[in-house]
Amino acid sequence: MAHFSVTRFPVTQSSITHSSLSQSATTRPTTQPVTTPEVFSWPKLPTRKPLLKRMGAKIFIQIFKEEKLLELYTKDNTDHYQLTQSYPICNYSGGLGPKTLKGDFKSPEGFYHASLKQLKPNSHYYRAINLGFPNEFDKFKGYSGRDLMIHGACKSIGCYAMTNRYMDEIYQYAESAFHYGQHEIKINIYPFRMTPQNMKRHQNNDNYLFWKQLQPAYEYFVQNSIPATVSVIGGQYIVNVNPKNQLPLWNSESDYLLSKME
Image (spheres, rainbow, N blue to C red):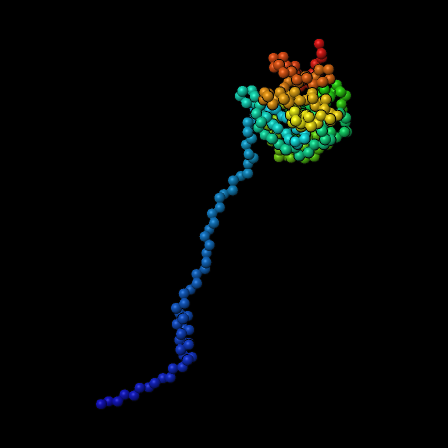
């Protein structure tokens, strides 16, 4: 019977460790770089000004000092005027009451109008619409001053100042209305909304009798949605409530008329 000798090799801790590390190194999965999904972005559209409502229609403007508000109306197909835009007035000067003297820094009140030649596209205050002060009423009273306007730049020394953005819109409406045949734009300027409540609240004001002359035109428009035709008779504003016999405050050449008592 043959005898075999077996040679035993000592196993050390270092050899186990090395073997284990080698195996671990060969079997460890490689780490893939983390990628984030692409975020889709919509292409940017060119910036455009919003389209203005009823551009090209005839317009009418009312200004209310106390409320610091300019209201722009457009004429519809029934010949009535509907409120189209309301703009906050950035600034006016002098408080309530009419302008009477050059240098009094007051913004006018009363009934004015603008023709195409009164548009100022290159005003020092961005763009402007000349009110036509003094009108025939102002002249009769001996009031003085000139170049009173609705304009931009938000600065006022007797004018009605708007932000440039709002003035740009108002100017576009006026320019478009003239382009489509309107001859003149009526601009009625009131110290406040001339409701009975507000009239009573201001009844002790020194300008109350003057404001009483303005109130009928305010009420006429509220009731009829048509601007009143106003005449100057004997140095006073007179509203003709009979549409068939209205005497215009200004003629077709945009000059004010002084209507005399017969």
